[in-house]
Length: 233
Image (cartoon, rainbow, N blue to C red; front, side):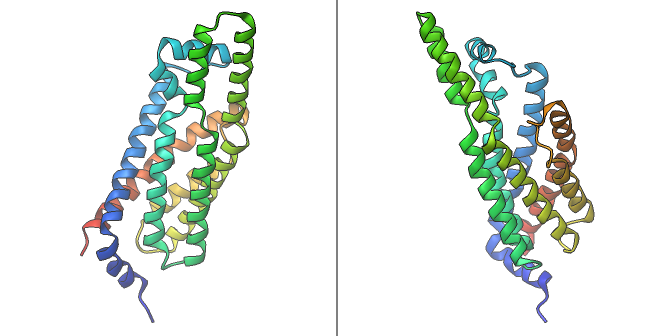
């Protein structure tokens, strides 16, 4: 019988660099997530198109941050994290780990299709130099379309796919000797909370904020384990 732990140890010689990169990526996501929370508290996102236009003219960088600029980076880094998780856990359930990695990568790609930060910045700049009411009306309508796309189908599909991917990985973690049970349970809790997207009204925003607590713990714990796997001979 093949010992999966022995195979994981053998894989380390091939995947040590990926584990180290994934550890750094996990901690980076944690830091960026913390920054995003601070930004939302200090500069809450506007509720109207004209509010967004004004915010971008007052402070372009804050406008980009409020429109999830850091989340774009987070999603890219999470692709590396889930790739490393696939390497570490595929011996315990290859089929479901392949499904989880696929869901996460599709979720990342779908999220990128929903991003609109730089489009809104461009519209804001055009609105600032518009000289007629007709031009402003067209730009306001375009801005409203951008906002609908930003929190529309692509975003919600991405959010749910990522929740499913995290749930699958965390359930497999429970049965593997590599990651701690605490890591697995934090992942399960975070994924279940993520099944209510932040676009689901006030309750959605509240639950999404609560989900950040187990997510932060999960990121720190897997980062520590990835560093260990990256050092182990």
